[in-house]
Amino acid sequence: MDEARAVWTVPAHRAKMRRPHIVPLSRQALGLLQELRDLTGCGNLMFPSVRSSQRCMSDNTLNGALRRMGYGKDEMTAHGFRAMFSTLANESGLWHPDAIERALAHVEKNEIRRAYARGQHWDERVDLAQWWADQLDQMKEGQKRS
Image 1 (tube, rainbow, N blue to C red):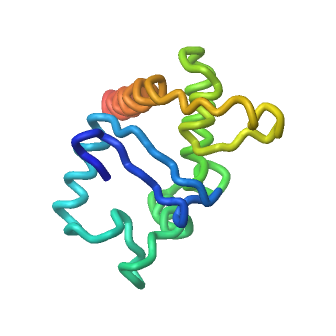
Image 2 (tube, helix red, strand yellow):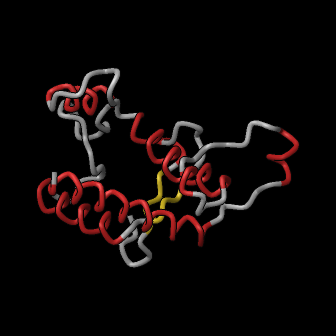
């Protein structure tokens, strides 16, 4: 993580598609990552497995936490947070669909389009990351009022 540039680089060997993925970090994400570091130290992984500090936490760990919080499998999964982001960002009409897809590290399935549409939409993704963090804050605040 590069706090000065507000980016998190996922190395290719850790990414699903085996391609490096650079993620812009919102102000809120930077703050939460600092809190996490204060709790867990400065290891190589932000979310290590309980079994080995050399392996990252699994989706099953997150899904188990969701179950303990009372969410059923049909209500939310770890991967469901990605779907929620994609749905709300697309429905907002504020963002180019390609920027949303790049934010999710998705690769264009159409070979011809993939060969020519190589843009990373970086500036838009930076704004998108901050917008999403602000949306989450608003959802959290709305929950507190209820």
